[in-house]
Length: 508
Ligand SMILES: [Cu+2]
Image (cartoon, rainbow, N blue to C red; front, side):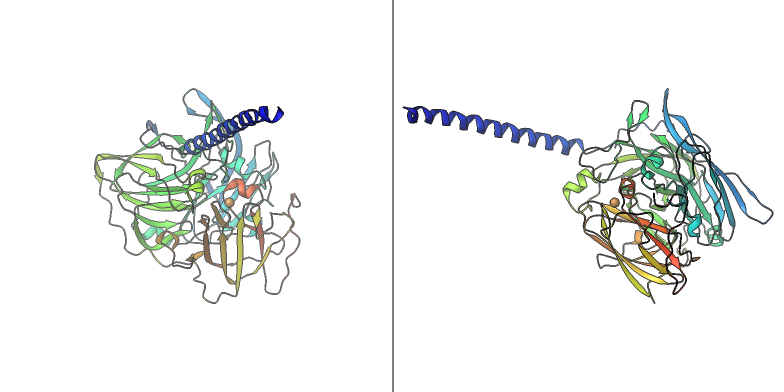
């Protein structure tokens, strides 16, 4: 009897089980499909371009009795209307959002008097600058709320587009996202002589690109599911301007592109695929202009490009989808499939003639690896570099002043990373065993390493020696950096040992 009834019951149970499994599988599949489709962002063709681009003002400075150029920066909180009638809480330098453009010449002594008017401790780091470790503004040079700090150094490097931003251990992403960032332009005799567009805000435009997402009037800094690169916004702004346009009146326009986003990598170009000339990378001029149609920049990287305008035209600086993230999954969830209309350029009906670009820009000062005395290896993992998460009281690497070294950096961590080294401009010798492309042939301080990339770099450490105060090397995807993807090196005299890191907030 029981055997006769158990068969249909078993069948019913199997049918129900099968249905439940099917429903769950469909739901999971549907959820994944939704996540996959929801992850792709495009603002192409959707931007109104009805806001005039803000040009960060040049910072005022004065020259001291001893010839030092002195700047004042105050970190402060405020509000800014990115959208009319909606006040967004922000942070800025000498204003509500972002900061003025500092400018100095090679050979000049500079001092920046910084006051922290925030209710949180922070730092100001000079990204790309060669300077003593104590002046670097890394996590060991914290400025308490209400406190001040006056780093000073002598500019001794070629003309370049550098920038400044906070670097407090564990909170850099938040401080940059709220608006603490600005440009630091360096000039030299060569840059004064070269026939490149150089009228700031006219034919030489600062282009600070950041992605944002709004929650009503407020910034939404939340990380979405699967985005292990960190924060990815759903639109871009330039110099803090949403939907920006810029009127231009010259044939040749120089764009100083800075990716000041926290995690997003862009691939810049124009909708008509016009070629432009890359004239500079992170640390200054290339040997000669390189014609290209796209330039990829990961967080922290800069590029100076010169683009030719046609009278009366409107064109758009666009970021295109990227296909080199090392896999479809990473590409989708790390922002590689996204596209943005970033900045509209509106050319006047009659354009002022620009001189032709020089065919040679000059010699590189970065080392070529000859006579390297030491090779080091860096394995990039989100959990830490070379298997170790950042510790404020641990020196990871000790380098000798004046030494040239080669650093091999590898990412096989299954997600994009990049690599930034403080104090130096380096040369990329190899990318996966091959000669680097033109955009990696200039002076660099930050390089993009998608999964499956190994780069060999040549670096020279000129000092001064300071065995107790470290410089940082780290991933510049800021939530990775905050999470411990950072290490410390000191520069010492030959035979000298590293000391214990000093600094008010060491041992964090
Ligand atoms: Cu990273």
